Length: 209
Image 1 (cartoon, rainbow, N blue to C red):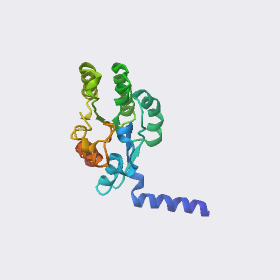
Image 2: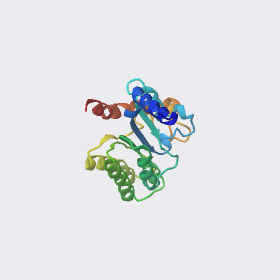
Image 3: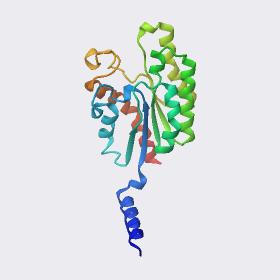
Image 4: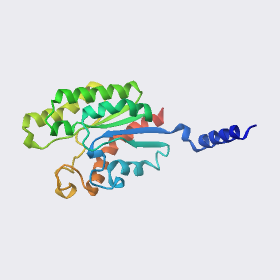
């Protein structure tokens, strides 16, 4: 048998023995709140999630496609290529805050996020939707409309849904950076605690199937 063919066969056997062929993929699609803004990458909640799940889910691959400053429109434009590249089983969708901070029409934000959710479902990926809030100085009506669009999407698509990813973080100045918008390294740990109870049931559901 030619050497190259034997090498290929041995590589496949090794991959199967390590369980790599059965790896599952989780894609995080977010903005600066998921991109460890002004922090070391290892201090961001996505990296902390990787570490916390490594033992219980050794075959889980987490890819973070979050970009600081990303809008829902930008995320929607990038999303099809990312779905093709990573073939995720799950998507954590955390976008929209930059739309609101820039005063964009929220019906368009909702439509963009809805399109991403539909694309994920068409790719057989389950979605965990992370909701957010914006400062009250944007006006009560606009801030409430923004907060409410996430629940509307969650109900419409029957999604796993965390209403406010910065719960117990945004109101604690010790856990927020000086800009008042992004968590500190310590705050990222609380963000992880907020998210874990919502993502683990999705991962476990596949385990049971």
